[in-house]
Image (cartoon, rainbow, N blue to C red; front, side, top):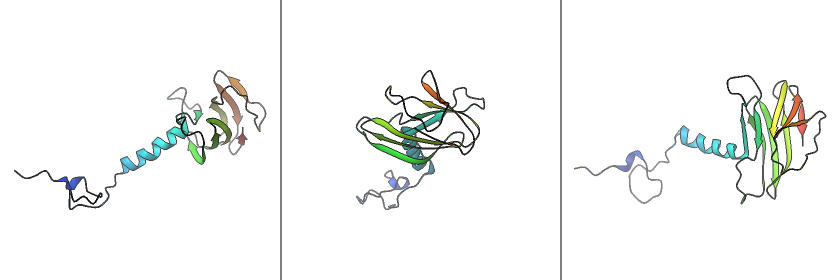
Length: 142
């Protein structure tokens, strides 16, 4: 009976488990890794799926406590929002949102009960979310 051939998996370790030594590439695996990192830093989805309402932004929703400092720039959220944020000592310290269209942007409050200082007027807190009326191209920082 032939020995199972590990060729379909490849052996990039150099341990000679297979003569097939190239590094396998799958779109699903590589893109999934990038998606996991982005979901740790920024999440956005509709509060009412199936309707054209804006999504709720969650900043650093799944960053482990061991990663006390983190930052990102130029990530895109659903609805065409451009987002950048910084975090130090497990606390969100900066946030910039650029509107991709006209409407109300909802940002989930994860600033540990602190009241952020906003660069725009008219920010309203409703429940756990900050609501900002924005027009395409507007920039709001906190």
